[in-house]
Length: 308
Image 1 (cartoon, rainbow, N blue to C red):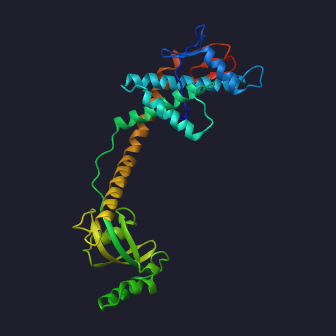
Image 2: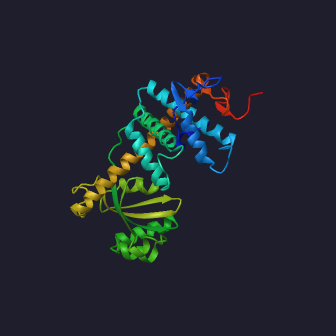
Image 3: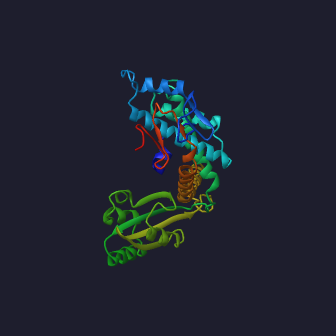
């Protein structure tokens, strides 16, 4: 059972052990039971034209997933995270959006909802345990540039600018950047991190109104810094209040996204540890009704045929 599968699949409650499950349950694990009637409804829906219901292999896979996610739910409860009505409501919304034909009450539908709810609860638990660290507010850079091939050409452009040549005209004439060149070199006002590092290092070290030269993998940039810094009227006096507000909102969104991305590796480690705990600690608690398969505690799966 891979971590990727854990994060993407749906799951259910179940109780499992090496012998058969109790008479009215198809599977059991950690106190949760999968009623026989519910499982039979799923089997009929999964393969309605098969008089033997769903293939035994498919039933074993379904039960394995039910056991796994039910065990995950039990372990999350031990760690103070319950699968809530909100998780289930979000699961319904996600499943319906992914498949408009999805029917919550159909055979297996409730199990799919609960499985996805367990995944959502696990993600919430990981986010709680590894919260995003505060990140300094992003700056914005409003600039123009002229992209050329060599340092000598860059020096020549700077000389022309010092002599009073118009930046926009030179950009239209000389810039190798097909996007900004025809626009007079205009790069707009963008959040920090939008350009390659050498470009930004040179630009943010230059006072507004100044010109900097930076070399990157694209060539040499002659950069005119129009304004820089957080999205405030003092830092960007040429920009109207409405646009500044949008810039501030953009910076806040990007800052939050980067903070979440920085926390993601630790969250993945937590989810992997959760999965390993489930596989090692709950394998001996599983029971499966033998008419549906046999529990393989070493592989943490339901085997369709008796273990040899």
